[in-house]
Length: 378
Image 1 (cartoon, one colour):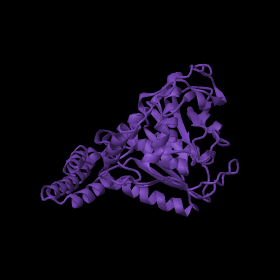
Image 2: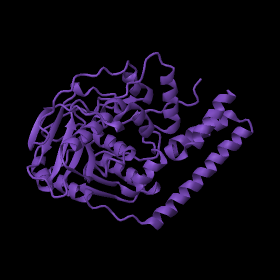
Image 3: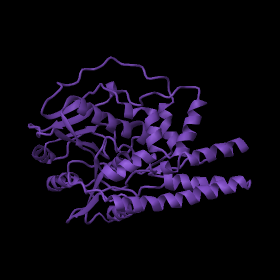
């Protein structure tokens, strides 16, 4: 019997999008990591002939764009490593190893996917900025009025079709966003310091998970009316090296309508968790008179401006905060080790589950080693 019970991941809002150009029901759903992986339990991806993309560089709006370049960071093993807690990732890998079919290297067949891309007419001297947008709706669409703002700030917009709230997180929404970023960066001169992930409502919550798990790609996240606390079973902390990079280099910007009470409260919980986990480079603003709706052009402009304004890292404050977390974690791990040494297997298992949910990748490899010892004893 497996050591852990896979945690559920609730990622969706149940409110309607009130932005006039789109009306999509945000249907709540719960999906486990194992269920997310089920579409990956198939034979190795058959390589389709590369479909030529549109010209390497173009300007303006293009719909139904097909990309062809795959990305190392969108591999299935990389997704497991960065987005699941260590014990859940280890358990999922073991189940896959005993499966009758192989895990696909890439969960997405790009030949079957379509993207919308908007490219401003003029590139800034340092290169374009890039906003990869995760929507709650199914269609790949540029929100009304955004083009003018993107032009002013020199930011490319890209969004995948069929990546809304109904899509699985691990095998669609996450890799589609990563592949969108990679293919744009392959075709245009993009400033790596201005590569951002963003989204609205349920898509915003996925954007936060991507920013957390891929700080070596995304330098910031625009969270529009949707967020979660980090450092729990739903949004686990990534491996320590990635989390340290997130703490030091990632800018998080929250924009939520003042009248969107549910998501105002969620933003408060999310920003509180940021402080708890030594993440200080964030900014939150409430849009006056707005409900649960996509950011209008003025709000988008301000959000993009705020994304560019990274706060200088206070190394002394960060070091002190990290030290406190390390001390707390060490006590918990030592307690689990003592329980196991005393033969209290069930007590160790329960404590490890709590450690895994709270500390995620920060607890590895010690948490994984203790879990392995439990399996041997069983």
